[in-house]
Figure 1 (cartoon, rainbow, N blue to C red):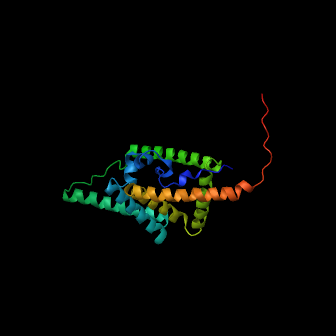
Figure 2 (cartoon, rainbow, N blue to C red; figure 1 turned 60 degrees about the vertical axis):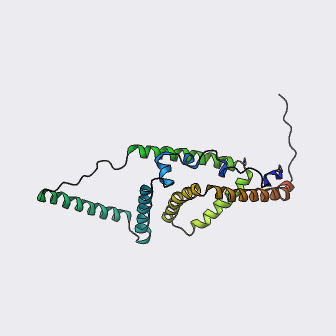
Figure 3 (tube, rainbow, N blue to C red; figure 1 turned 180 degrees about the vertical axis):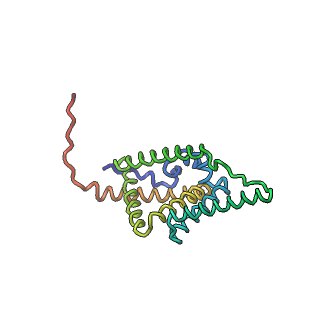
Length: 220
């Protein structure tokens, strides 16, 4: 096993971006409307989305509503409101309700799908590289994180886990973008500590594992 140089422990080493990224956080998130929502550039849309998801979580998890029951009750309420409004408008000569035929733009779904597809492929590629041992330090970090995630999963329902992921998506990119310098500084210190621990584990444990003789490749 190779033993890495201790140059990376030097505090004077220039800090790199978290996870080795070269692009700004907005570009990493895919840019466009999706990144704008996650970074709270449009506070009204981000707040409305957070409020709506929180209401849904409270209804399903706290009030223990069934999806079919909730959907039926919302549909009945909406139809009654529209019916009363339209009937009253004809009777009192009011303006009828202006109900839009299309609420969400088609391009928004297309942009979200493209962003999700790109992020999923990048995540899968990184996972394969780590699993193949191309980044040994990250391999042990990933194993530890997955174990912690499995433990957390014992105390959360799937709906709670989805809501927790949504809260993280709505808060972590925004906080990171706002306090990027502080996060980079502490993340750099943590990364150096992890690398130091791995080198110690490498030299004391992995290098002492006996290996068979390496066969030389025959020349063609």
